[in-house]
Length: 334
Image (tube, rainbow, N blue to C red; front, side, top):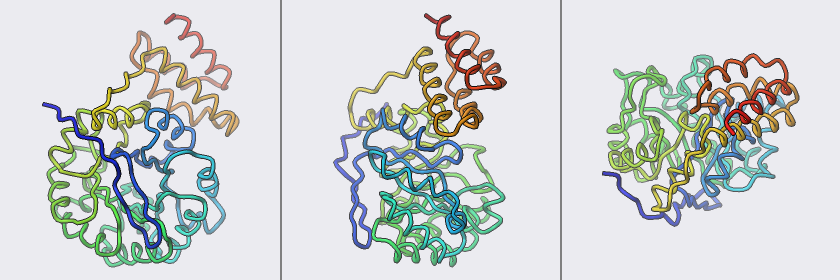
């Protein structure tokens, strides 16, 4: 039986000098190559108060002057936007956090869960799970550097034989994290197997700070079951929102006892894909088509010959050709 949760007025996070209130218990995960400004604007239509995130920002890249556009975009966006940072150097992370705070970040999130090898082997992302003392230093340095709240997103452990999630998460809490998002898999698992929600329940019971559950949230019924199992303060939606920017808003409505927005039908999905393509091309030129291809592949589903259309879209040589394919499919559906 699905449980309808009462609306939560706010979840208070206190930084060194600023308190921030989360009015939505559903968060949109930072997704590399996905959660850019244009994607966030779509999610925001269905979830006006949800905490959204930038894509991961490399502190070293900011030092070199790269990735600054990810921060510059914050000033013109409505609603709370967190900046997720990763690196293995406490000083670089502190400096990057100050840059993000000055740009208007709602909070700073430290990535200690990314399983990508090129990041983990350099000591960033999930690599910090094997360096707990360094991880604690990074959290402490970032907390001391900014006035806004600092949070951490991480995993249960490096591998199943080494995982001690309660001890690991307590260390992050003691270092100063104001909130913890826990992906219920180890780094070794990546995104394979099932998320261990029971492990999140154990962490939630042991910590004083809010805990957000992450992993295997693909519908509002998933979110409800996850909260029942974990007792967490909220959920974070990751891969489930790829091609479904309405999912965060649907879950928020369900958990708050409001009518759940209807999932867009085929024609609405095609219009959404068209709009996203046009915006990406406007922002990035022809390169926007390359970025849009994956989004169109996720969004263009649920109708006859959808696979055929996706195949053609992946091979469309120009944005004009891709738009023509979408328009033709819209006519066929009308």
